[in-house]
Length: 131
Image 1 (cartoon, rainbow, N blue to C red):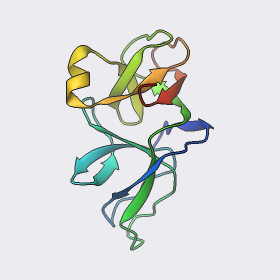
Image 2 (image 1 turned 60 degrees about the vertical axis):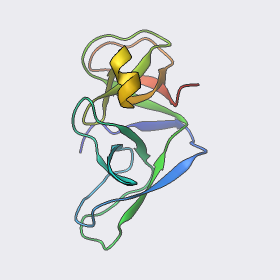
Image 3 (image 1 turned 120 degrees about the vertical axis):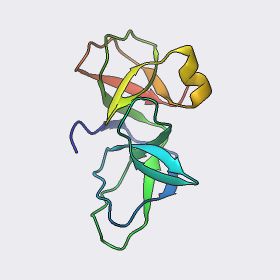
């Protein structure tokens, strides 16, 4: 995968999720909830945010769990327009974020708050969670 999130401030809260054995997941991959306590790499706008992979998972390695950060500060790629400092963001596609609208709050797609203004196709500093 490409455009993985880059850790700037280490996370303090890590969640464990079940993942498919045959799936490869790179460190920094943005994860979505795909079932009951199950995660996969996010792929489209509207995915429900599960966290950011904090470990590498090789395909068919026999491992069926992965750790995901749900806090910390990460550089993440903007897709779908410009966003301003302090905006709440949600998932936009594979490893990307966009400005969150009211409907995203209800759907659980929010990722966190950006800490700098960003333009489309640039990385911006993002604090996970809604602090």
